[in-house]
Length: 221
Image 1 (tube, rainbow, N blue to C red):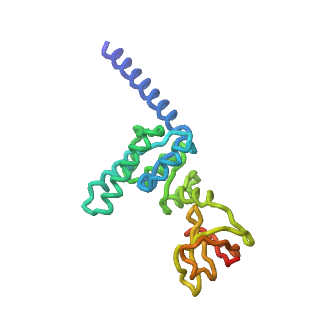
Image 2: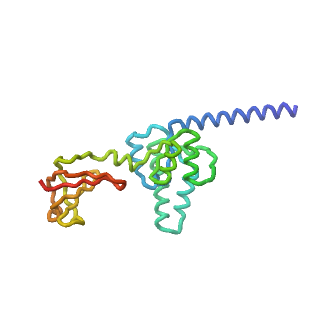
């Protein structure tokens, strides 16, 4: 009788494990893992709201714990970052499916947990962290970098194109004026130093793409 009870108990436990694993696999299908940096940044809210992420948004417990640690920090800047990250989680939950699955942490270290989980379940990671981005890519993990997305969506301008720009400040070099396109792209205008506050027509002479972003150089028309 004891043996039979044990067999039934073992059978029941095995079924529960199978059900849990099946549920977890379903949750992780086409999912995106959220990094701490993305939650603090907050732009993921607008990306999700616009419908550009179709799968579940996954929060690992180590990510939530790191935000709580920051929110309890004695350092004011860290505390604000932690609170902002936790607030953004609440906002995300109102517009997207955010899950905190029961996944055993490998070390409780955020970057390690994200990489290990993404590799195990073949999911994507969204991050703004340069080092995490680099490590994930070397392990063939798909990374959604919001900064790269923003750069990809910026207006394309080419040498010879005529554009309108408002000169905001005087540039570093002699007689330069600096303005910005609607997407935040910096526009440096030769001869524009004396036109601060004015919207003017300029001709694009050169476009430079650097790791820091795009810069457009122009001259007055």
